[in-house]
Picture (cartoon, rainbow, N blue to C red):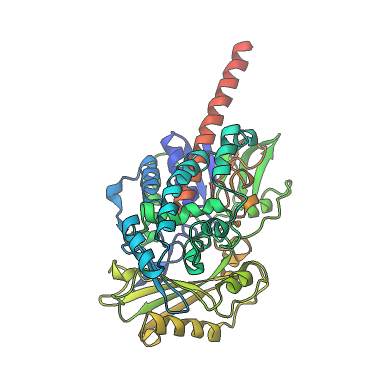
Length: 492
């Protein structure tokens, strides 16, 4: 089959790799001058740091999916972060997370006396919840809604307590509010509200201990050239850069081609890997649901004249009123006055990102998506955040800074991210699982989708899994269509 892929993010590239392994011909259209989407680098001279995602979760799934796409493990290197990360609370408490439950139980008891048994129970029950979530939901598409609403799936769903929030679930294990926060903030990894995200997302903090937090040597952005080179080495593959698709061609209920400035080209199927809510701009005949966006981010990239060897690669700094911060992000849509923030200092374990003896630092501040906040004059606000980072963990940070670049939801929206949100549509209850757009999002034959807004959701390994589901759905449909054609010919 000849297949068009619209968008060269990780979902589009992985879909293309799976489809070429099936023997199909691929033309990938990318509107930018390079592929990768948000999985790329910000660069300044010899400084280089990941623009978007930084944390590799679910390493075994990540490696398995790459292997199935034709990328062997000897072509990249995953490094376990040990410790995983540090959380710094406004009262001076410092809590460190480790990649194994035994050490973590000791840390829980040291920092939060009396909470050890609750942590061990969280890990024990998390094993069964993770097994259910992975097999029943992550590894299945729900193109036919009836495939989701089976007796067994409903039982599985109830085990994951979708009617509960992550916060409510953590209250079953931990009494200390600070510890509850430590096991709910992970909803922010995919742009969700830690106070209201469905309890199924508790699988993320469980997985951190069970499977570890990893770093891809060279940065996450180094994955993209690897995928692109592998794809271009395969026959029947073409990547067209600087080529936005203007319209999907739909004939008699089937996607039959795409239109660009160069004209219209016919295809047997089309896969959309842009921000899913934007599909309405090239599919004007179909009304697109008004989705709720994920949270946005202010991202700060720094080139430093030094490396801070005595800190962890990943750190979280909690503001004076975390609940207020989350309300400002998800409800009142205001610029947070004393926000929590995250730092990523990969130079501790990777000397390839800066000149010798120098380092890079990435800061992420959760902020509202949408246009409620007018970004453009945040110098004073950012200075206060940088001063907190300097006082708590990075002495002399301002003096050490040789380069700084800032990106806000305004730039994210201009790039094409939905409402400036950093993670596609938000992981709310009714935008998760069967309620999320599926790999075959409409009753249009030959039209498929992959990406952070498509089931099973955001996070790089999960998007890669979604790409695999899309390729599998295509194979299933092509086989069925081929069988139907054979039957029609035989009857004639």
